[in-house]
Length: 219
Ligand SMILES: [Zn+2]
Image (tube, rainbow, N blue to C red; front, side, top):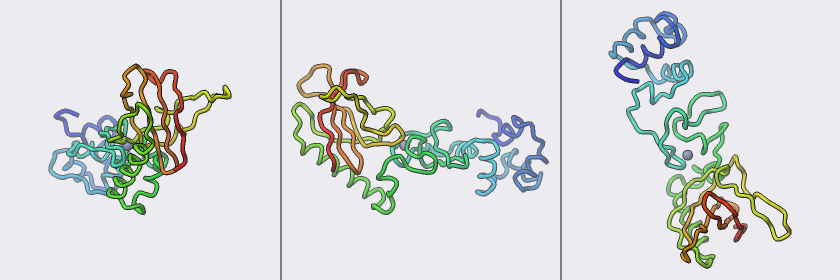
């Protein structure tokens, strides 16, 4: 937010006097004045209150000292992509696609701690890649990486042999997946997606056009 002190800027934008802001976050007017002069920084509890009051993340209040990334998918977080708790407060550890309404959208992450944290998550990804690679699908290259993908971006509609159209993913959930170029060349790509329950392999043209389901397999 430029050179101007962020606490001063936000208070002015909100049309509050130093006294009024002080009262709202249970500090003295002098404390507010000291933040605005850059002499002190609010304590953690006060930062939370200010974050709610001004609807900006704590990271922004602190002058964005650390680049924030989603602990689940690794994307860089800004104000617009940061998740929120059900009460509207920011959860600055996750993006809004991986964590929504107080819950993780990737099933593994709902049980992340119980399943062994980062190490367990990497093992799970390696396991999924092994399972994809064991399928030996013609034209599909080796899977070397899986990314967290939101259902709404990859939920293609497949036409079954019966002529019925079907979507197999949940728009609100996240999956581990990737896009792979067909080793035979041509314009079709492989799309893969998985969670703790199943593996999905499909092919499609640019931008997901004319999708065809190759495999949908319970794990
Ligand atoms: Zn994320």
